Length: 249
Image 1: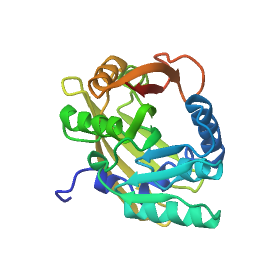
Image 2: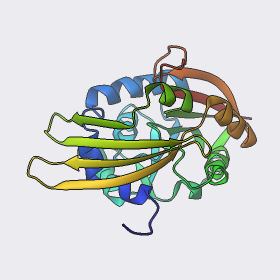
Image 3: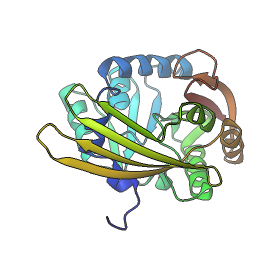
């Protein structure tokens, strides 16, 4: 254990191994199709992928003609994103930064933040700084698309303990507790590899309601235009993940 924030220890190769059954190329293509339809940008539009990870959305969007910038805190993932872009002869801009330090102003037609990449920080005030930075980075009238696990859905599916096995034979144990006062889902994840070694990590995610998110977006100067369920054009319900489309005032 060390003093670094949990999100600097949680990701990396263990995370990819544990979620490989979800992060499939087919899923990525479906999600990028949805992103394109919802944003409705012309070819050449400038998009910031905030918390881009290993670049699965960023690289696919770049291949479709968008000018892509990716920001993430994990050097391993940024290296993977760079390699994936090079393999397809694509030009992307990548920056290793904390999400609170978005260094742009009035630059992007859209910002995306996908697969529960929000709520990592220690306080609601710190999360608000992220949304303020998103608004600053957008051009007037620019769009922000975020997709995440919201509180209503999480409480419907909440399990304190789960086992599952990935196609690669990695067995994963997840143990969770939810604090209704702070709204944080605290979890321990242990990955057991076929060769006998294991990798353990902890997370503490602030899980917001749609009402809370709309209020925070509004405080940043971003007005909610639409909500969707599960990165599809289906309506958002308590039985789905949440995608929010907001526009800079």
